Length: 350
Figure 1: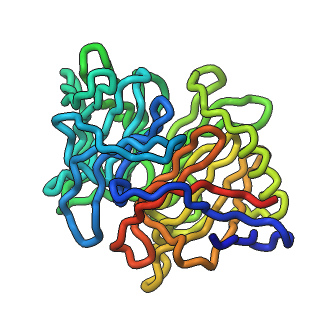
Figure 2: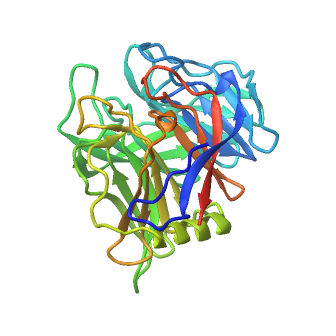
């Protein structure tokens, strides 16, 4: 386990991904990973580099016991480059993605109470995207998700990304897309973070990072105080360690340039980004650096913590927050072809 020191930080501080489990069922990339009732549900993804045929299986990983099992639920969607969100504490909704031949905007849901996959139906008035892949899907409530990203078929790409509100009715098993009438840069493989805004007028902003050759985050939604009632995961010890880690580094207004297919998790006032593929190089494009976006002050600052261990390079992976720990699951390694079967926990040495 290599320890990475902060860029410009003090001696004795650093971070590392510590392996805690290993299972061949977890070896995949461009999958989704969603925490539900203390288990991580991995849906679909690509099992090897170079293949265009995504998996249709669902795997549940128990972080407390370190065990992974295949979920024997019929009708699982064949998907990669999709996103997923938990609805009603029961349904795991998979939104859009690549099915091996085309990009979709459909919604499939795993009913975890019944152990069955359901194909939800679009309601009249539905205005779906042309096709979604490498997009983001952010939960605003049990009935609303915010979907962002570049859309289009395999032959056509738009020069911008639309912003959609996806309205869900779990009781009726229906969904409806509504285009918000505003656009973002053409982003693919970006990440989204719903963060509280600092200052005298608090609220929430949905920020998009990466997915295009830009260092600037983009606002894909703003809500005044009280509009977002989601209860974020509580991680007091991890928040404290992140605060101490950034205090050992030197902040910058400029974030990573041209990063895509990285991971992002929100930990209190911090957005924690890891790995991905950079658009700024022709060789050695897969990264293993840690970036922390600190919103506690205005303007927010970026902190960069590089790593020299090539074994930690990841692309198409996921991070998941549970029980005051940040977990790293799946992804292709340095060669961009071999999927990692490891689960790791982020250790901070401060």
